[in-house]
Length: 337
Image (cartoon, rainbow, N blue to C red; front, side, top):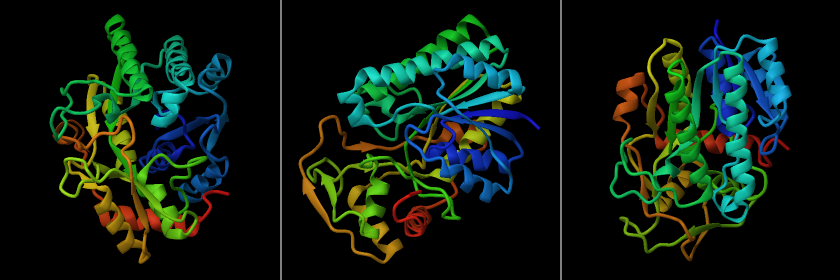
């Protein structure tokens, strides 16, 4: 049984990946500082996996704490999620993003190198593509981030590429994923961001459950079929399984790879509203407001390389994504609190 260190382990994507890794037979060591997650996630993971999570509450920038984990466990590979991830916040607080996302990565890599653990799945983002020149977006498309968050992901990729060139023993999977949505079918874990959500799906479910009055739709004059922004929404469980496939691939000694994780098709904001109304049987009021700076019209993935390389493709459709997201919100109207 291989042992995987999972950083950012109690976050939205991290917690779902923990469950999928455990169900695939991996021994998971979780790490998080709870900056954007809740300790109650650990109890929920225990209920789903029927096992007690091995967890360390610390920051990836803490060298001593990280080194202690590597000394206490033989870490075969790392799945690295720990990072700040709100686009708008990155614009207003860029130094926090560069410190957390880049310093955290470099510190983790130093400890991995010291302990001769050189397989890493890196959580990147479709944000590295910025405003794409064409869609669907393939992995060789031009990278041109439009905000500090996207810049930290692209700079992290560069750090990892430079590391690989310096030492060919490193194996890295660069996973650029699109818009995670939905929740675990059990309803025990789901997206519960602190403060006002940045992503569409938790806003939709909060309006449907009555926690928020209405949804703000940023622009209806985009060059799209209905004028609202189009994105590639992927079920978070599909996304988590992509990470499982990626670490399995690396631990087989296969070469580094850069892959998009998405569904390969886009849905507009208005299409998502209608899908959530069907799933929840609730009306979702919305208001059209001005476009946000830095937003783009259309973004969805070319996923052929991920399917060819990992044998991975999405299994959940839009209806299931919305149903699971609604089930989570209905069971947890105020999130984990």
